[in-house]
Length: 183
Image (tube, rainbow, N blue to C red):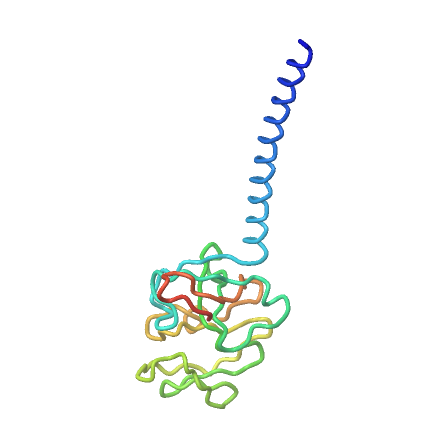
């Protein structure tokens, strides 16, 4: 009988260790999954400036899909997060206005791509901004502009954004709650 008391005590210790080990394994797996998802699938970003008003407001929080551009090419109108070409330690969010091989110009606040006017429904109707171009977008690059054209440090200032700087496509505003929507 004395032996069975020791057996029960050893069994309780083993169960305690296995419970602690299970918790540790669960936490380790959760951390690993979070890192993998953030690195390869989705990443949250904070909007710090007015360059994308009215589409994105200062303080908005967005989710960026890192997978979209593995299956399709960026296209005009996409809101994209990318490494700033002049300082890759900074992330920028802008709208894709032109892709490699296109000629862009702005005349009388109207965007022209390859000489044809482009409708930009995301811009406020009364917005007026300076003429620009024409410029040719090199293959493998993108011309990026903020929706708040008069308050945006964009490709008109620093040139085209190379494809290797792409982080992903902005797909969702998730905060504040009253602004939750797909982009």
